[in-house]
Image (cartoon, rainbow, N blue to C red; front, side):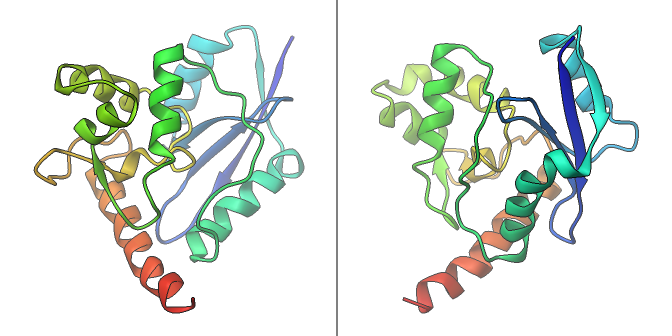
Length: 176
């Protein structure tokens, strides 16, 4: 039976859970009191697994999230255990091109992966199924007109993450 390890990350900016397999970080969930997002994800992707709270196993992952939330880390360097279709993985990789503190539209992502406007809905679907929120920065994806569109963690969290990055991006750029 596969074991998954979980721990919580808390800050004024964002709170959530990190789930780690033996291969790497496999799920990032926004905070819910009852772990409903984590359990639903686990049942869909690893129904035979057991979920164990383990601060030590999750510590290196939590450390990078804490640094990000403190404004001292601008990108992640973690092993990941990514489950998704080939198309989803291409879209998720494209999100890594969005600079810290900036945004891009679903259409931008479609163009970056060699698609046209007809693929915008499919790109949006892939963005919405991103299991590694923040690592693959779906919070930086906005509507074509710059509007803040849906976010799995709620628009309040999206706004908080964007404002956090905007504040620290200014500091980051002024230190060069």
